[in-house]
Image (cartoon, rainbow, N blue to C red):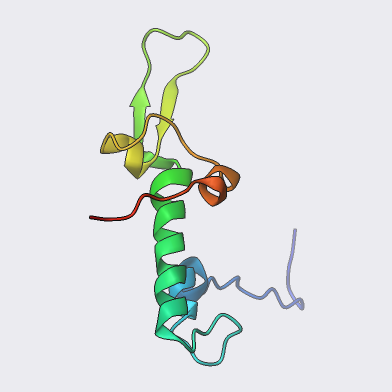
Length: 101
């Protein structure tokens, strides 16, 4: 297959799009935080999603007792034994946090 005479653009992945919290710092985006309180809330939400709702491939554990599954997916919170399961976003939204003492 020849591609001569055709322009094939390279796909560029912006580093800013990979880390949504950076969008809160860039003024010319729709996600820009004008208030410090909103910036802190967005940062806390993204930390919560990353630690409780996203399984990371580097944290998975090999299973030997289950012939149907090879890996147990784990989130950072599971790796540090803060929880025993991966949470859904809905569960995180319905959870009531305890006040810090």
